[in-house]
Length: 98
Image (cartoon, rainbow, N blue to C red; front, side, top):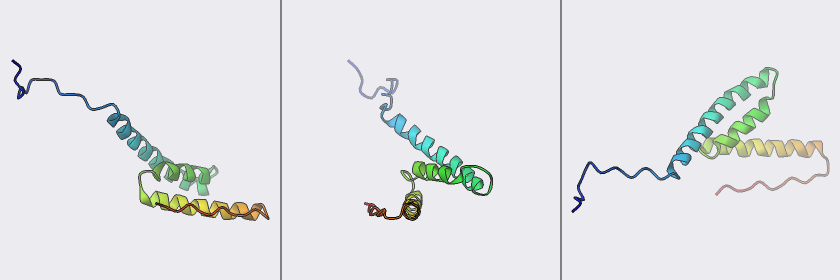
């Protein structure tokens, strides 16, 4: 007969779906946290500052509300800038946040 309260029994490992989600979270936050200050520095140094800032916000927006707000603001500014470059082009309506 097997004792249900046996503490020597091996514990069931965490489900595989739990591990990648945690790793993905850490990878997104770490990558975004590295790219954001580098992108800001490249605004005054020679290099692609705006694309790095956009990439970092794209990574961080899934985890932080402030990054999502900044992403939407950057997207709106980019849409207005593109409208000035291409006269006659209508702007897309911004997507509403749920």
